[in-house]
Amino acid sequence: MLDKVVLAYSGGLDTSVAIRWLKQQYNLDVIALNIDVGNERDFSAIRQKAIDVGAVKALVKDAKETFVNHFIFPALQADVIYEGQYPLATALSRPLMAKLLVDVAKEEGASAVAHGCTGKGNDQVRFEVSINALSPNLRIIAPAREWGMTREETISYAQHYGIPVPVTASSPYSIDENLWGRSIECGVLEDPWVEPPEEVFTWTKSPSEAPDKPGYVEIGFDRGIPVTIDGRELNGVSLIQRLNELAGNYGVGRIDHIEDRLVGIKSREIYEAPAAIVLLQAHQALEAMTLSRAQLRFQQKVAAEYADLIYNGLWFTSLRQDLAAYVNSSQRFVTGTVRLKLFRGSCRVVGRKSPFSLYNYGLATYDKGDEFDQSASPGFIHIWGLPVRTQAQAQDISSLEEKER
Ligand code: ARG
Image (cartoon, rainbow, N blue to C red; front, side, top):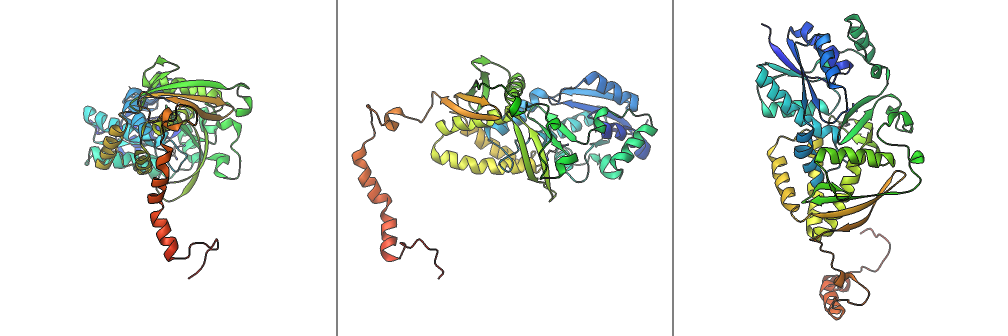
């Protein structure tokens, strides 16, 4: 009996070629593992294809619920957005896939796991650091990093061995998608001056073709987790799917990002993330109303740290657990409803309410019912300005010019 390898199998060209290649190069039996994280596909066709191409076994795991509850929602609660732009859809899915690869390798008695990443990207790092963390002695093989074939060579390899070349292989774009977003790179997108052609977008309408009247949506949160749309309760998976459709129809969710990869290169990435954009905005709006100024400021630091950590493949670390514990605690009053207006590519918060709101009408109003004691302000200003006055008397601070010393 041959040794076995569990391959993270997408059904695309590279991982199909990898099945054959692993057998040929390493003499391993390949178990193809397709992981459903909300990338809509025909899973029975994928399974059949893996077998046709030479896998000894083909498994499909529905990981949508785990992905939402253990990866997407914690990230949403933490407001993570990499470099102010990218909600981290691809990055969040990798540690989950690594975990499933390790689990299946154990179940199947495989001595190795494999993934289809190249040697230039972040995903190889995320997969391998996570796999090593979960199972330090498991062997990892990265065919697409080792075989040194160009895209054309991969296609002719496939043709030579009768591996079907999907139509998508003729598309110049490299695409990864899951519930939290769609990542698109390569082709003309590699010229950062070129506007992304309309054809790269499939989840979002062009804003110029979106409805000419605005739409409204209300998201209900319970402790930082979205639980309702327009008052109707939905499970996490359906809620995200529904919002992707709804906001995508209004042209919301397109992102054009020059991003800093962990391996040191800048790359141009286009994203479609309608649900992520809406939920992150709504969640932040609710936090603005229910967290103190000090909590909000600290939250920004946590969010930046957490986003880098996820991007950089460090999900399975103690620091991640510690940050998550803080975030979880910070969410205990982030309950309420946010109203957003969607219109031709834009998404704006137009209303928010919470039973734990720190917004106090009596304190804020300029109308009748004002409870703020304005007579206390001079004393406050006197003390607040004390160090400013002290310094102004001792040092010249009046000039508008920046002086050299
Ligand atoms: N640049 C993104 C990341 O590192 C997405 C990579 C996804 N790959 C793709 N084929 N577009 O998370």
